[in-house]
Image 1 (cartoon, rainbow, N blue to C red):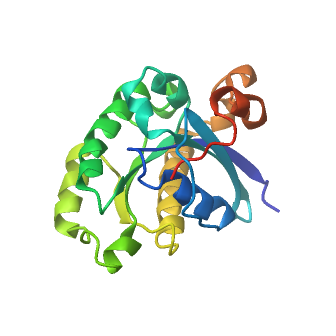
Image 2 (cartoon, helix red, strand yellow):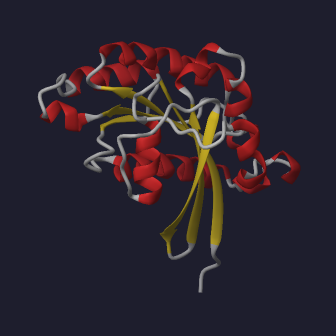
Length: 219
């Protein structure tokens, strides 16, 4: 029988205020949706454990970064040891797409893959969220050719049109990002859990209260 392997990956979920970051995380982790989330202050956390294959378990720490945090100095702290990210925008609000480039640049300048993995940029997936509202007549669907070109220019590994409400492409986007990280790790031959001292590793239960305003969630 093959030896069971476990991987721990810290994943950032960023984007402008109100783009649906918390809704995406809640749908992915708990398979629930609500339109009543409050805006996150600082950062919130979620944990998802995935039986990726008979031999591999993946534990995801999903860091829900508040939309206004890009304008402060704390994102460098929040980004530490991240191995992948989602950048989210709202397809019905074009101004949130303008923020995509700024969020991607912020990630690229503040976090890199571990040197043991060869360094370089962490893999980032772009999510064009709230596609359910397009079906209701708000905004318009993404032009695939234009988005392909945009993502290539900015270094996104892929993009997905998503809906947390209708559960569209959430699982697919996550699987694509996890696969990219797994491939990088396996090519490096270095386990993510062995990259740093245990004292430097983020522990959800110890840090959630430190960074999160009590009970706040973003949408």
